[in-house]
Length: 155
Image (cartoon, rainbow, N blue to C red; front, side):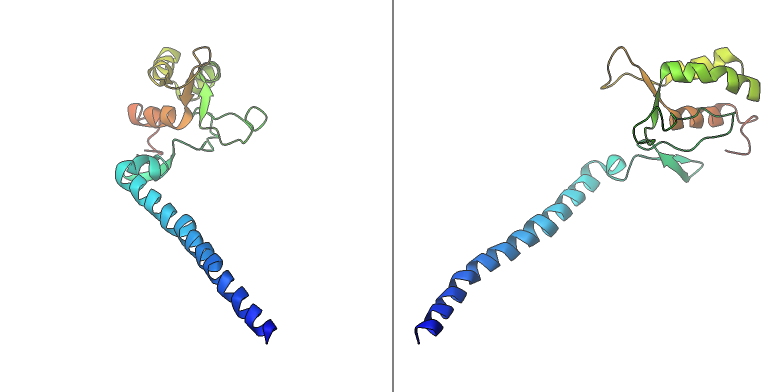
């Protein structure tokens, strides 16, 4: 008889522990993430959706992830040996400057105009002063928009 009584006591003792565990699982694993996601969608929809970039009404990429530009008429992201993940959307201004000659030769756009596009897009927020960066997708979107005769197939 004692074993059944002690078994019932053990079940009674476990019931609040299991209940608290399930409640914690629901609150921390479901309700809180849904609440934060909904809050982010309301307060910061552009950032919460991945900072998507549109061109002519279509999503063409994200400001947060490098796009694969391989044609010589576009600025290109860092290759994998220069980037730990290969997903960095930004390149240094020096890397952008080094690509200006190639793009100018391939498109006929004057190097000074390409240099101006780079200079207009330097990201100075939250970066070290010594290293200035530009977003590759932003540069290429600006080229498509400003030089539509050259990039007519892409705009």
